[in-house]
Image (cartoon, rainbow, N blue to C red):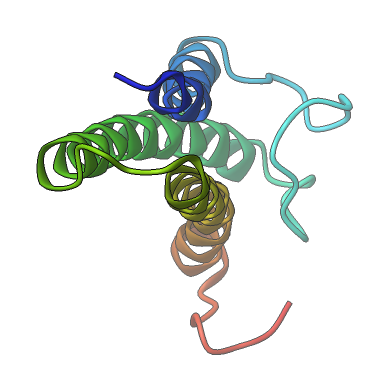
Length: 128
């Protein structure tokens, strides 16, 4: 098996373990430099606590999803295209890596949307 597959599994594994740590040990204080920042959340400790735990859980789920997705794509490539060249493997790797980065961004955006809806009554169509 090509080593690029294992390199691609690194980011989802980091997402999973970071989410696990974030969920178990969320940032406690809104004033700290660590934590997911959402506009207007610094004044509401309940919203801060909820957002940090939600973000951790969402990162764990995203990490698991991307580990499975990456592994499935890698196995498909290995089975269907056993003599894949380095160029095609690199293209597949870059595409998967881009999707993983987009997944991390989606987790942040979704967390912000849920927190705004739950604590501030803001619909998802309204801008920041």
